[in-house]
Length: 421
Image (cartoon, rainbow, N blue to C red):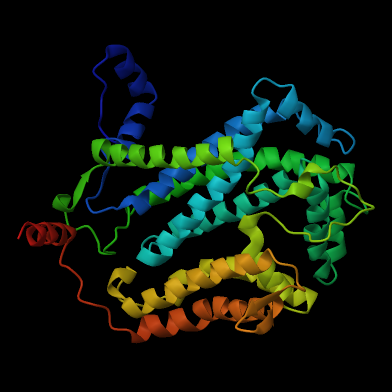
């Protein structure tokens, strides 16, 4: 983690900083002591926004846990108690529930920015790996949190997803029983999920600290994907990027507030307002929206074991990006062919999410044809994996990048000179 020789002017703070140099650490990491490339755009705001989302989720989660009862006969009623009887309980719950969706939106944009600008390339591989670990922890935390209200979709979602592990030979059944705490999704399952859902955000916070530490060693990447040549290529993080992040935070909070106050249940499922009933299966079991692309990949493969492997592989393959990409340029700003395939990959990922929200029996009516969504999921899943395993390795090694600028400073000043003329 970055540090500096900063000394507070106040004698009390100076004495405290000499014994515990927290103020110097903050100054070196987030203040004028830390210099970032001068050409960072608003896509770089999403890292700090992810940190804000994590803090919001932890704070609201701690307060909600004070009123929640992790028992199958009381969980649903305790959530209703929070909504109706706890002072501002409805606000806390809606902020927490929609905050999870906002967190995933921010992280998905953050990951796509990394893919677009090559932030996974050397010397930032460890930074990328830690980011993917955070994402995996988020997925586990979000899944367990979705089970806690103990509504119909909570119960059946937990049943379906945990049963996937039974596909693994030899150890599968043991893993499922370990997750359940018995032979069915019941009270031990809810207790385990509540305990882990409370614990994992603090684990995420610890990995975030390592993530920020790994960022400050090589420094931030930039839209050009070239290395910083000197002090002329950078500006102090404070006040320039602090003010930029503040503006981005203001816009983000407006969007967040819209969902909390005007559409709090838009991103949820209505079946989760029905108490869990093991005797009644919902007509269409779906996970939360941020899992839908992977759910579509799971269903696209007829074999259960291969479907589970493909679902996990669709996430874990991100770890291989530093080796799959062999281009001499980091940023796709100078790689038009790769950029085309990357945006096509984005469209396919969004379409997979749409396919995941549909029933396997649904069909798409297009130009007089009835195309099953299952077939479309298989086509989209093929491109998803082909992008990583075929397109990225081949295109990155065959495509000749556009000429790179000599330095960030030359590029910024050159753009200014062109706009002035």
